Length: 185
Image 1 (tube, one colour):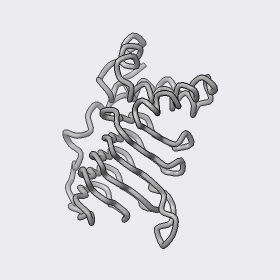
Image 2 (tube, helix red, strand yellow):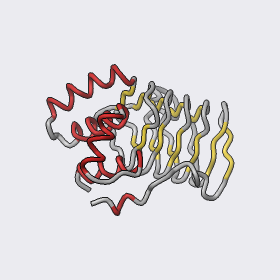
Image 3 (tube, one colour):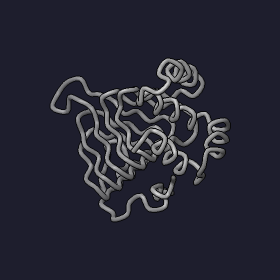
Image 4 (cartoon, one colour):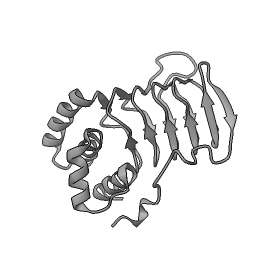
């Protein structure tokens, strides 16, 4: 996918909108979506100087800090502005929804030394922490205030600290919305 198609996928996930005018309107009204646009442009090396400048400015306004090297699939949704920190070496899949207060970071020592890999269709609630060389499967719901430093299989819900895994088919049903962004031009 091209950068523009990825941004349109993010737009569709954000508010169901399509088209250039909806993109401009959403970017003006929602700082968190504007952050995603600047990050995507910076990652694609389009307008790199200006997008980096704008990215720094909006980072101070929103509290969102996602490493510019972080591979992120299309359909990223940052719900509300608020402190979000994502390490450069973490990986985020398609159609992920992230709420404020989330930390996706590195563990520096021990058997889980490294960064998380997050699958597709993952919903991460407020103030959740995901650290270490762990793999989060597809269709996973991580509840608010959950600490995850272990692998989570697909089709699961993780709750609490220490995290408890509960298997559930369609775990993110009703949480991950508008994933049919392929219809976007």
